Length: 131
Image (tube, rainbow, N blue to C red; front, side, top):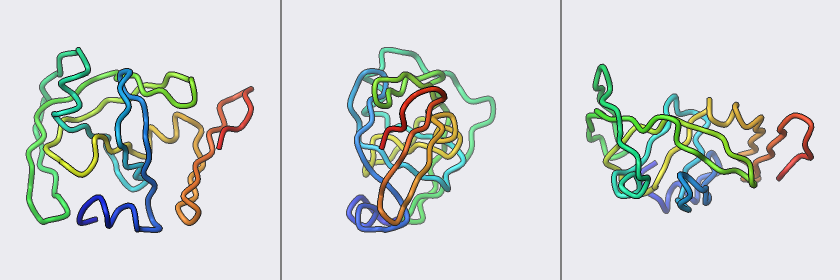
C-alpha cells in the first residue's frame, strides 16, 4: 500500500477504529502482517515504557524505505467490542496508520475477516458473534 487513501480503497485489507491502551486509534487490520506496529505519536500516550528489542530489525515501507525497529510495547490492551485483548506493538515511524494489527492478534480474537465486504466477525467462546 502506498498510503492511507490507497489502503482504504483496496479490497484486500480492512481499516477502522480500535481502542488501544484506552485511546481510539486508526488501525490497519492486516492478515498478511507477521507483527503488530504502533506509531511513536500514539505510543507516547500509552503511559508505559517500551522494551528494547533484543535484535533490532528493518521493516520495508511501501515507498521502499527501510525503517529500523528497536522498541516494543508489550501487553498493550486492545479493546474489541467491550472485551480486552492484548498485543505487543513494535514502534515504527509510520504516518498513515496509528497501528497495524497482525494475524496472530486477529486469531486471539477468534476473528473471521472478509476483505471483500470489509467485514470482521469476532467469535469469542460462549459469547454471541459480533460483526
